[in-house]
Length: 353
Image (cartoon, rainbow, N blue to C red; front, side):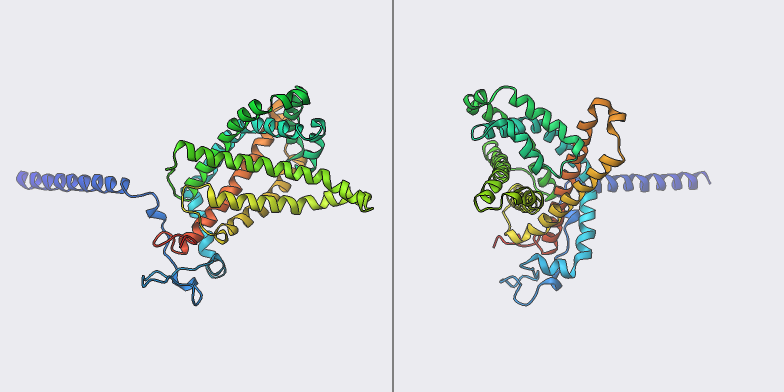
């Protein structure tokens, strides 16, 4: 009986030891598995219309446009995007983007005001920015307005003479926010950053300068439209046109900026424009609607001043920036899932052939 019990115990010990070895081996193998493998989506052959297949004899059939996938596989796109959002811990990643965005916000305002003051009276920039910043919650815009006032306190002449040095420093500081966005989009598209220091900073500085130029161009339109209308005898229509025309202008600028961002920011071969438009359209419409709803909520329900005191406006601005970052990254997740369903993980990426 004793020998039987001893043999039984020994057998259990051997089984437990073998199970432990197998578990450790499997865990190590799982750690070596590339991050993208668990989420690699099955390429769907049924979405490709006639003529939309690979030229080779490979068994993977690929769509050459995202429209068939969105039309026939929209439920799969939504399910896959939600899984990606959960796997990437997108809310936490967006919060990290907001942190670096706040560090870049004030240098970016300095660069904007410095550039504006070279061509116009700097004291007028606040009124023009207010007309364009309709999506920013009213109470939180005071944070931006205060920073503009501090920069203008140096005087327009000083801003012009110190343009090169102050602008270069401000742009380099603001550059950190764009690098955080690029890093977040690499997470969204399952890419590892392999670009060198010079190339990465050149890309992020290009986006920084592009954003600065877009804002200055929009301000220029706000200034130019009343002048042009007065020249053709429609001076009274300027305010009305700006009040309603700023929304389509804002939507077009946002869509164009997001399309360029999704196409060139991640460290990957650039797809064709059609593959980045679905996420861009979604993010643009959701951002404008979300900003309007958040502004209404902050104006009628939330009282951050009572909770956070003098930091209430800053907290409201952070919440708006967090919402904006989430929307931008979710748009990238939609694009990534559509590309995965098109077979980009098995053969060539969409549009790179």
